Image 1 (cartoon, helix red, strand yellow):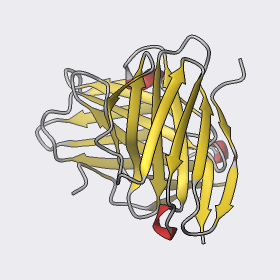
Image 2: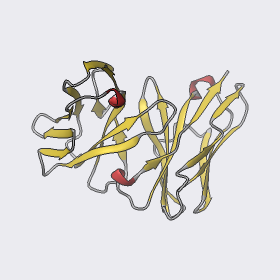
Image 3: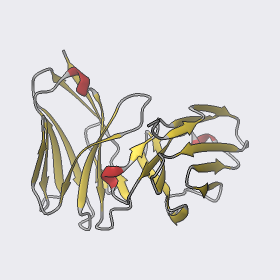
Length: 112
Length: 114
């Protein structure tokens, strides 16, 4: 049973518009949430994270929102750029931070 | 810095053969992780080491899988015997502390078992 779910396998967005990637989790013990970005033939790279004590974290064009009561988080990319086209993984870990559970990923295509 | 190095980048083998994947972590990092990515299950943690000691191998799918870290600069993931369902991309990652946002991933090894 997947503890971290990304129900949209793919998403297409026009350049300049907002991209919203969603993630749901089932384990209430998760304390720390992350987004990773992966280009073809490369390993995932860390993008942004949020602690469970916050509901929003922003880094440039990337913002992550956390709704603990709904066990839901989202990644907003504004404005979207063609270079953002990649697979985005949502991930979560407990307070020990050692074991990270990844979602299946969402493939984002930003159309010029 | 060369980053995490994995070899080979691609491996094609026949069912029943032994497969060994190799990883060189970033110098100075004391934690090493092995992940597997498949279409069905996404990215799964197989095993991780801290200071060369295996800490959690609960993600290793079967006894056919084994991992070692003989020193701080080298780790192997071995599958013996390999099966077609082992076909996946295997990633190695390293970090200087047990915090997920510090993990640096290698480029992965694409394994195909025929």
